[in-house]
Every structure is written in structure tokens, then in C-alpha cells.
Length: 368
Image 1 (cartoon, rainbow, N blue to C red):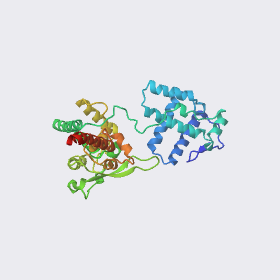
Image 2: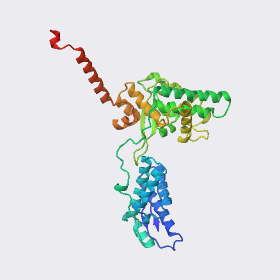
Image 3: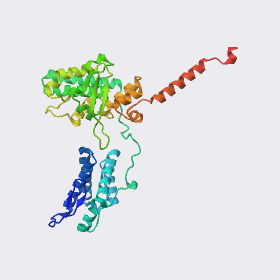
Image 4: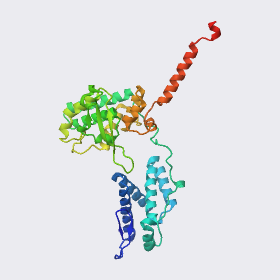
């Protein structure tokens, strides 16, 4: 038996397999991987889905051609009640397992014939609408997740700067990483960046904005690793600089920080010369939040939420904010904000103004 690059199985003459069950599972996963690669999906997405299938295999201790809906429901009952998995995590498992079952049970790929020949049965789809979670809304972040208030954000940034000064004064190692992370926090907020967009920035990604010459060569940043659509490369966009303090922060880092960590183009290299991992930055973020007694509802993505929220609170045009964030639809931007939409804000303001005007206008009878 062999699997081609599009995931189809071909039966070939061979010697009997010593462990046909494990060999078949390995070939199924290889074929499924090839099928997903042919769809141009991200390697990280494919690897995660395969890990989900492997975890289900370990839980059931059964082979895919013997899976039943009851096994699926028991697995997710365990995932929800014992491991307290988030709703988005549960659905991620279900999507992966449902796709895998669709692959191995599709006659076009030939696994039904292989399993019938070897085991006297065949794989079937065991994930259906009635035992899987439906994706019914775009925003699935927990209700505790929120943006920083402006006061909280300023306190957080001040604390990050203070920690850099403390480490530098003590002579301990860690001055440059603390300095780098402080600049990363400020840059993420300054441009409303996702973590992956932030970590991939390079020194050549900044440019001048001819309509805002006061920012010099830091008038905009080219984001080259934006969130990709399924099967597509990362989405590019340019984000304009809006805060007058941002150029100074970036210029100071490029002068006194980045050259001492790396002689390459990466804006935020690690001590080993690689890109900073999310876990590394998140550990410092959480420690600073704990130091300040900030709520656990704040996370790295709160810097992006805060960017959109604060711009709208300050009266920036919602369409401008939408483009800065890289959203195709205004409804997506609204998910990130903690203020009412522009339409509702105008409606409220107009209603209040009309009420006040009516109250101040004398009746015609009174005027006579």
C-alpha cells in the first residue's frame, strides 16, 4: 500500500504487515497531511489537527474504523467536564476530527477498501450536527477579556520602563530582553498589532508618511505577516502612525537596543537570535499585570483591543480604525471595541440634542 501526494491510497503487492493496525493509522495520517498540504493550508494548522486526532486515538484506544458517535461524545464530555476546555477549543477538536473522518471514509481515497480487506470493516463519519458544537457567532472570546483603560495602560507602560531601569541599575542579566519587551508592548498598542504581526517586524518595515512629516521615517509600518485567510499567504497592510510618542520609542530601541541583540533585520530578536515566542512575552506581561494588581481579563491581545477602543473614544473615524486594524468588515472591528458604534453614538447624541432643544423652545401659547 502507498499514499500519493494528494492523499489517495494505492494498493500494491507487499509482504504481510507485522502491525497492520498501526501501519494503517500512520498511512492515514500521512495521506490526510498530503491532502491538507494540497489545499495550501498552513503547516502549523495541519500539525495541530494531526495532534488532535492523535489525542482522540489515545483517549479511545480504538482505531478509526471502529470509532462510534458514543466515543466522540464521551471524549468531549471528558474534555469539557474534567479538563474545562474552552468552547473554541472543543470546536477546534471537532472540526479536525470531523475532517479526518470525512477523509478516511471518502471512497475516493480508498481507505474503505483497505480496511475491509485487512479488518473486515470500514471507517465512517461519527461527527454530525447533532453531536458537534455549532459556530454561530464571530466573537468567542471570554467575557472577562477586555481592553485596558487609558490609566491602566499608562501605569503598565510606566512599570515596564521602571523594570528596565531596575535591572540595568542592578547589573543583572536581562536588561536588553526587558527593554525589548517594553518596546514590544508599546509597539503592539501603537499600531494595533497581533502578536505574530509584531514578532515578524523588521527594521526595514518602517517608512515615512508624506502627509504626516512630523513623524519622520516612522510615519507608517508595513505589516507583512497579517492574519491569513484559509489557504492564502499572510495578508499585508500598512498602518499609519497616530501617536506622537511612537517614533521616539522605536528610534531609541533601534539605536540603543536592537543592535546589541542582533546584527540582522529583525526588530525584536531573542537572545539566541531567533524571533521572540509568544510564551516569552506573555510571561513578562502576566508578571507585570500581577505586580500592578490588574485583572486577569487582560492579555497580550488587549493591547490591540485598546488601540481600537481608544481611537474610537477619541473621535477617530470608524472606517479609519477599521483599515488600521486590517479588518474587511466594520462588524469585526466592533468586536474589539468597548464603546458603542459610530451609528449608535450619533443616534444617541442627536436624540439628546433634540430633547434639550425641545425643552428650551417655548410653546407657541407661551410666546403670545
